[in-house]
Length: 79
Image (cartoon, rainbow, N blue to C red; front, side, top):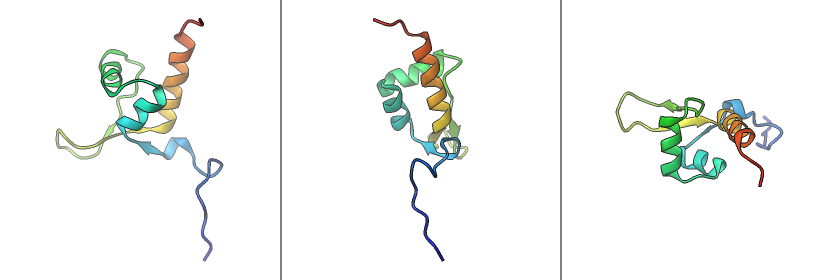
């Protein structure tokens, strides 16, 4: 039986789940700003809730966060 190491080449961002904190860090915003973006920006990924409870963990697909970051960068003005 062989073991396979996880590397950037073997991990597909479409199948990686990250937390709200990690998503905010990738976007370069605070947790509060990320929460506001999720509510106010229709293009912002809403995430996936695991469970029916109100406080069930929410995760985000890494590829969705990358896509949203590209969108935000394309809308920003260069300084």
